[in-house]
Length: 89
Image (cartoon, rainbow, N blue to C red):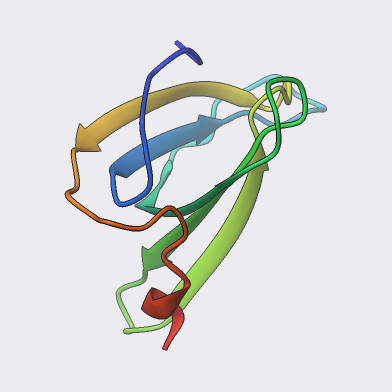
């Protein structure tokens, strides 16, 4: 399930597992992809999530990491830029 095709601006849900227990976490990390970096073997994605308190949280996931269980595409976005760093403000 790691081979889901997504771009910047898409909303994705990333399920991670604990590296020590190999259990899937109960709450996945869902947010907007603001950056895709790297080449095919060293690719990372930066995801920005809005919490219930109105605080934004960014997290960087390496795509070839064994911690990622699966990635689900929730919604396609329509953007004209590759890096959406203006969403940080």
